[in-house]
Length: 80
Image (tube, rainbow, N blue to C red; front, top):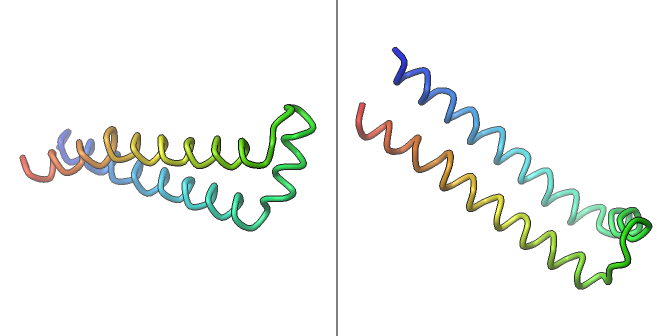
């Protein structure tokens, strides 16, 4: 039962993290100018740097989802 509970938790982690990643992507895509204006009030950053930081952040977050959620989930599905 514990193995099934861990698999279920990892599956929900995958879903929640992918929804968050999709939300981040849509927010950057659809509200780019507003987000840039909002962040540029706090930090002196160019548009190119802003885009690069968010692109790298989303890539790192996606790699983290794959390494820490998806791979353990698949391993547990294979084992049991």
